[in-house]
Image (cartoon, rainbow, N blue to C red; front, side, top):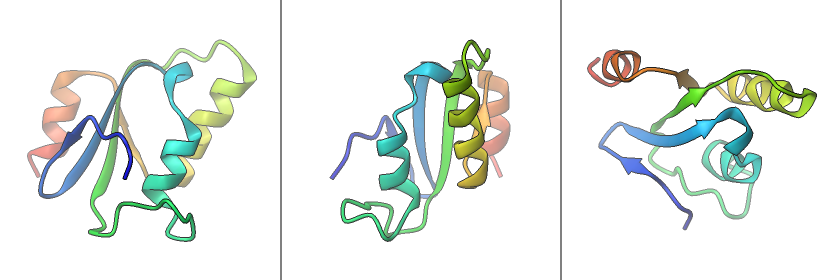
Length: 87
């Protein structure tokens, strides 16, 4: 399996300090069923709680774009996270 920060009945929630801490290999394991290490067989919604999404280099921009393209919800505050998971 992989390393998951928070797992609920409906969500896999990853907590990161900054956008630079996002591991795109882990993202692929969560979102790409063709990945041999895929582990989101229940089709849970993926949420990344990222405290700081400041874009400091082009790699960070690509990472944020990859999250969006994969259908991942990105939140920056606990209130936003609460709003997402309370639905």
